[in-house]
Length: 124
Image (cartoon, rainbow, N blue to C red; front, side, top):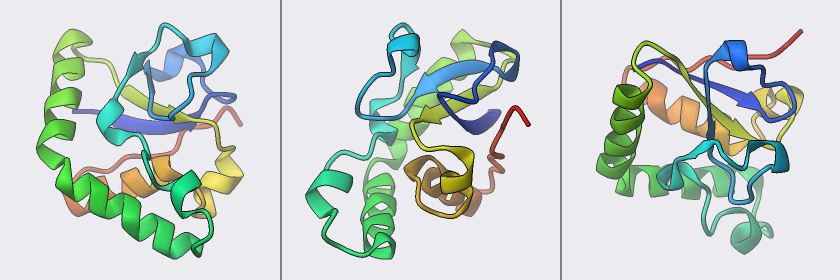
């Protein structure tokens, strides 16, 4: 399985298959595949009063609870788009993502604990 992350604004089709992981769909990506199991349900709005590290911990715990579903969802897409990278997208800019304030990079860190490197892609 080949995964990467990117913002909606930085994504280019040559990067791979766009896969939405944000709760809201970007207008330009309405037809993109969606991985509901990676979406930060109940983390940001519900926990926005908490420090970012506590929000991150809550999201990672939710990934642990949904691990089997996440694997199934991504394996299904890997079969459907054989040989192509799946690019996990959300709204945050690369600078915010790489500074640690973005759920797609938190997911990448979680995947790293499972032995899978998930780089951040950007146009520049």
